[in-house]
Image 1 (cartoon, one colour):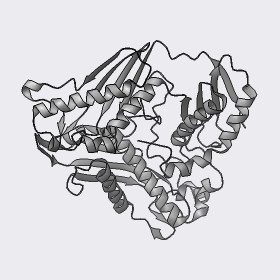
Image 2 (cartoon, rainbow, N blue to C red):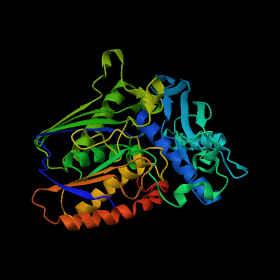
Image 3 (cartoon, one colour):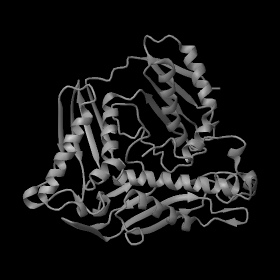
Image 4 (cartoon, helix red, strand yellow):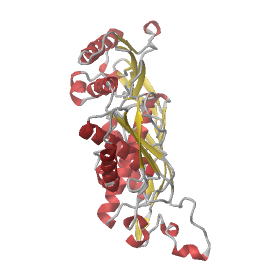
Amino acid sequence: MNDILVIHKDFNQGDFEFIERKGLGHPDTLADMLAEYLSNKYSNYTLKRFGAILHHNFDKIGLLGGTSFVTFGQGHLTKPIKVLINGRVSTKFGKQIIPTRKLLVKWTKEFFKNRLPNLNINKDLNFCLNISNQSSPGKTHEKESLKGARRYWFEPRGLDDLPELKKLIANDTSLGVGYAPSSVLEKAVLDIESVLNSASYKRKNPWIGSDIKILAFRSGLDIKITMCIPQIANNVKNIENYKGNLTIAASDIKKIVRKYPFNKFELNINTRDKFDVCEIYLTATGSSIESGDEGLTGRGNRVNRLITPNRPMNIECVFGKNPVYHIGKIYYVSAFKIAEKIYKKFGIENEIYLASQSGSDLLDPWITIVTVPKKFKRLKEIKDFVYKELSNLSKITFRIINGKEILP
């Protein structure tokens, strides 16, 4: 095994902190979670039928915004949302053809039916499938390549053509990072959005859309939050109703923030609203995806469901990647899990960095770094603990495909 580096660090959350959260209905979040939904559905489909998760990647999903008609009391799409499904996927196993295009369209409609219930899924979605079963670089047309794994990567003749069943090999050179514990502001931001986008809140406030965006700033114990909160036209009678809804939301947000140990709190909502010309965040579906906005995988929240520029982070997109051997997913998710376990066991703030080399042993990262507070001296215990966690990395796969690790 490669050595684990334990490095002492002066942990200090600093004098200021920025946190961004793109809510459940934000186009980038929709793209991320659609990619993950398709990967999980495909993984479980092939696992059940063929005894293994077949090779695939759906981490390049694009959602191209439609157009809508919106007025008080009613709203609908006038042009559909374009769903661009880019990816590579196994299209057959042995002699059995997998109806990948039919399945991907079916699963995408399922996803949008749950995420944007005001959509007409048979009318408001326009599909473009750019699906390939070509292997990444490595396959050649030399006669010796007949003995290699790449030739049958996306068209395996049987389980023997899936090398990861014998040994897990890193598919890429990449980096996974994680940390624990979450800051107070991180917890508060997630709390705000989870409440406003909860089923119970929507039952009481059917006007609220899901494309809620939050940018929070902390200076010492003073915080400022600016938010975008869409309203659903069918449930908003007039401009006074719209303004009243914003007042309700502001009051509920302040109640949530009061649970946390902050001093001053400043809140701004829908700062682009111009009431005199009725330029307001009124939507048909509750998401800006209906009005030309676009969503792409990897541009939204990280594994911790937030965008945290004051913390270690990577721009690697985990969503839709193969959950068996894709380092950009396995290492990123595992880094956060290991950091959380270290915090729970040792009670210390820490950061984890897992770096891979393409083609190397997935369970033995090329470089592993753990940062711990300067006063912490139990370094051997930390190393032994992390070694044990690394040996169990493969177990994360089934938690991922069962929806227990990567949350919206």
